[in-house]
Image (tube, rainbow, N blue to C red; front, side, top):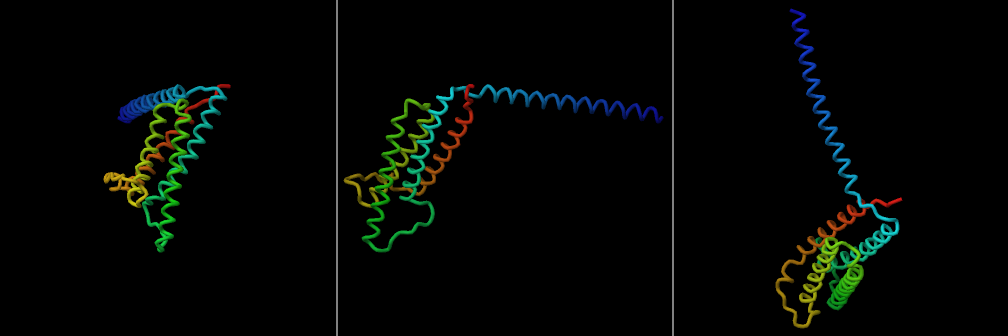
Amino acid sequence: MELAIATIVVAVIGFLGGIAGSAFKVWLNKKQSTHESNLTKKNYVSKVRFDAEFEIFRNLNRVFFSLRRDVFNLYPKDLNWEPQDEALLKKYNKEKYDNAFDANILAQDELNGISAFIGEDMYSLFDSIVKLSSHQITAFEIEHGHSEGIKDVDLVGKPRERTVELEKKHDELIIKIREYLKSLEVKQ
């Protein structure tokens, strides 16, 4: 009887060991294929190209962070301090508008200047931020009387929601840039 129980126990352990061994092999093969897949996802580039692309994205990043900041100040999503005096408020709004307008022009110029040197998908992401920023600036123009004859009610409607959308798009863009740069491998 004890021999029969021992035989059954050994058989069960052997069976379970086989299952565990098979599961381990499957897991190991999956890890290996993932690793091999990651190796093939690398883009091998020369040091000169890596340095050039890194510099392009560094400059765009700097300009677009300024754009984000200045356009955000037009319609902050949270509480915002504004001067109570009418003349000071007008001057304050004009300064916010001028900063956002100038930052938008700079971002457009910078993006257009390097458009041939970045991928179309990256260009589209940057361009969508410029367009959304332009909508915010136009809405501010309409709301604060800086515009001559622009009466697009749709633009004025939801500027704070666009501020949130602008932040989200910019955050997504930063993630894409990081992923892209991380995918580059410098040839030795």
